[in-house]
Length: 102
Image (cartoon, rainbow, N blue to C red; front, top):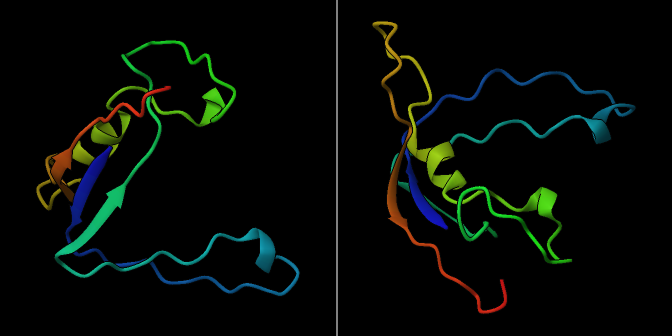
């Protein structure tokens, strides 16, 4: 649905993991260099608030219309002045393409 370009970010310090809980801990965050391109493709509903009448994928894993755009294109962090106007992602392409049966 969308393609994004990442601005640089700093990953938080990693945490210590024991072998007992290693399988249950998330992996450490990635640090993406400036200029990194990420492409995401995901099922989304045909219009905002639409029902999903298909067996696959399950409705719980289907995004609302334009959800990726709202997640990645919106303001996501505070700048040094405390204002919420720093955007970490630039959306380079945002196409919704019907696949014929969904």
